[in-house]
Length: 375
Ligand code: HEM
Image (tube, rainbow, N blue to C red; front, side):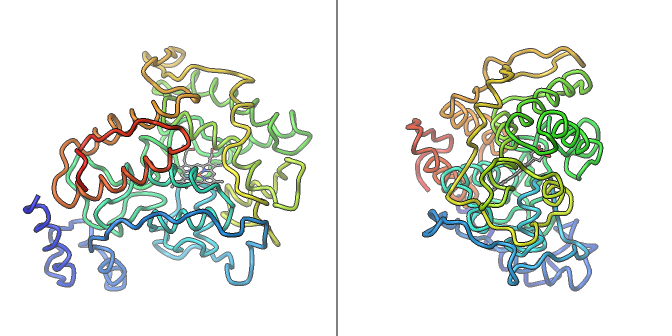
């Protein structure tokens, strides 16, 4: 433990010396300005306790003068999540796309009224696989030296683009990882969203459309993606994402559950709040996901021998087994990335695991401790 602490302490000290950089191969090509931006991020950070719910969760103006939409600057990072992209492009998150868990929780609550425990689970599960537990930083897109020195492999710290846990197949506006680009807006994909909204929603995206489109996306991946997989935890995010646009992309003063397609394109492609956008009235999470699921129920599973070979995976949590989702995520997904962490790394991972567990309080799950209880 002492050895690791020492390593990270030295790193924290060395960041102020440019001569320390040969160790960071990916930093070597950065300009002086870029280095100036990187340097402060390379220090270790004590994990911050997550923020609580909003004191006032009523609807309010979000696209305001203090948060203008600005075009991307060189080096700004965006990724597969239209909500986080939009929050960054309006300055509710750092505009460069490098964020802390606390910043994300504050931003999704303030900008979209995402419910606190739901936000915490999403953020800490994603951060544990895609963020840097030493510096407390995560990219909302691809991997970057801006999140600091990576912990030892097999940890990836790959940012939200990483195809592993939260990012996965059957997205509405991004292609499956197998086809080469799982994070940029894809017009062909969005046209399915438009076509289904026209066919089943009279030109709007609503719950009926969400169920039909999800079934189409599942069948499409099953027939065309030889590596198609839809198991926990991705299973949960896939169904959540089907209803998010209805729950929070619709203006909080509009109560009919019908998302306009120009507004949808604004979020998914342009990363922009509509003019005069007001957030949802009251905290909300994935309400409606069970409607989408029950219309076309599926078993978690994967294509195991090329296209059209979908086989149920009985080890995966279903949408209605949140505790299995939590425990297998920690014991399998996290353990695979961090088989034997030591020192500060172990201490911080244990703290983030504690934050993750606390977000499951309503499910009464039994806590699991893959790295012991001291932190
Ligand atoms: C109000 C909050 C949020 C909303 C409305 C939202 C909405 C969405 C939607 C609609 C998608 C699907 C994109 C598509 O299918 O084309 C998506 C994808 C994604 N979101 Fe978010 N999101 C929110 C918060 C978060 C948070 C807190 C995280 C993690 C820190 C996150 C991470 C992701 C990732 C990794 C994807 C890619 C998943 C995939 O489609 O493969 N999102 N989000």
